[in-house]
Length: 412
Image 1 (cartoon, one colour):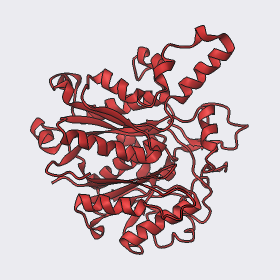
Image 2: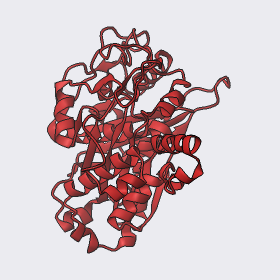
Image 3: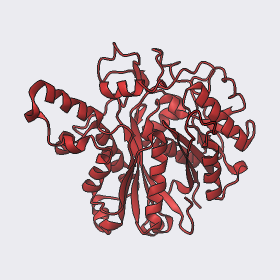
């Protein structure tokens, strides 16, 4: 994807993150190195081998959303609806303003990884305990991957191109690219991004089976991507929604702000394990830069995927060093303060990249003590770094071989 003759602008951000609800709270926490990782509190995880997560503390559907919607949907959708509403408000789009636009020109494209797992677990428990008459009619849709897209569409009267991308963490970036395509095909505005709420007992069991989760009990050492002591990642919930518009249209309507442009995107898929083929993350980054018409030396920061798994960290470090040269570009992983939020992680990194462009500062990677073998060539940002930022590359990988890369640049 490239912007082609149309500049795609990001005009609104909505954030729900483990270290802050709202753009300002989250951004201040990132720059201060404040972590949202701690013991799981949403259920008793004492018998589970994984007991830490990045939870969005203080967020509850009741009071933030209509009770009707809360009863019909999963926490994952509650987070997405709240972030979408905040993003629309940030973009200066009131309900009245949306009503004045052609509803068929308003798109919604989100990403999902685990869907409405908590809602589904609760209804299955009711089925076994009380029988089929106690299962909610909304079970048929609340768990479904497209539920958040559908609920945003219904709530805000957006009847244009709608969809959902399922590619784990890479899906959050792919959703933005799909939204940009919708704009190039005639849509006037799109809500895009992703949120995750994968901290129910059943969802945690599913994640543990990947073998990639950290089993440490110390929040300070549980998730250390690119570190010699890395032992996996910490799961998390939350995410971000973005409003994207053709830049010319955004300026015409008097959008309060333009955070930046979506300049280029690329997605690749790794060859099967054991095939002898090489990972294709570097190829995704190269294609995204080419489509953005940005040379590697023009990139001011890379927001890393940061798996926290030694072999995956080494592969990402090699891809970045091969593309930019040893210590050729600042690299950061603010998700060390959040956990790995799957489909919500990419959009949160995109939000952080755009805020870096706005404020000229790079948030840190926390906890790093000693670079892992193969990762020493990275210029890892371990303290907040004041530096002009005009172009950022965001990387994401999804379990199963998905790779995605997005270039965002300053507007004007």
